Length: 169
Length: 147
Image 1 (cartoon, each protein chain N blue to C red):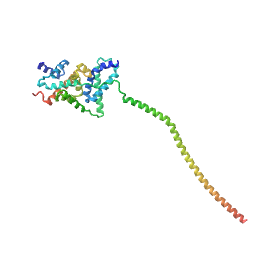
Image 2: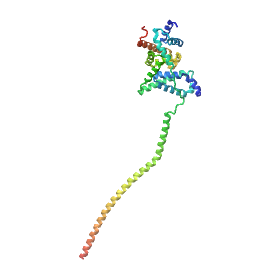
Image 3: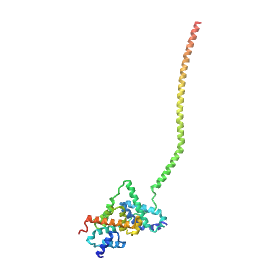
Image 4: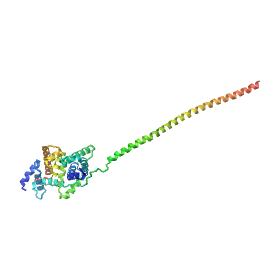
């Protein structure tokens, strides 16, 4: 497998890798570093990649594990997550979508979900993977994935209703 | 899209029972212009999902790691060990020489001290003998006079 073949296989999902990393690591720089690091790793194991049926799912699993490791080592060294640029991103998002508080609120709410719900909602509602793929990526049973997803969606909805008093029209 | 159908789909959605196609229907409805007032919270959710999907990884991906610090450290350690070996090789004889000289100086000092002591004592003996000599000559003179 040469470089251009490799890139043809792995580049289409680079944004998905980046977004998942950002979902877990919060800061944009961290996520960029993680994405870069992940592509090194993929490139190093390029011989194996040729054998995989679903490179994308494999890459997403790697991303998830890599981010978990990063988070663990961060906790161990007592570094706190940098939230500053996530604010920054919100303002740019503001401009894009007319000022819309509740859209930003969704970001915050997802941030506060438990890790596995965070990943699953990212993979399903943003990246639109089907359930079989998600099960493979997070190494969970389909029922467990559905339960986690349902919980995450309900939590987000309820919190939104709470903060903005929607539905009480 | 009829509202009743959307409401049904929303219920399914909350229980995570919708298919991807059904979720696309919801996505289109909620990111559209008209959303029923009692379903406003979904507008925020689906708008957020759609916006987030637009975020791109803008940096270029490098496949060859730039000359990383790890490699530098590896070579640094090799250089350090070579230098250490070299210094040991060159330094050892020098150090031995230095030690030898130190010892020689010590021995020299001891010998000098011993010889000085010897010469002092010899001097004493000489003085005594000189005194004896004067006595003897005086005694001889006296004897001559008496004879």
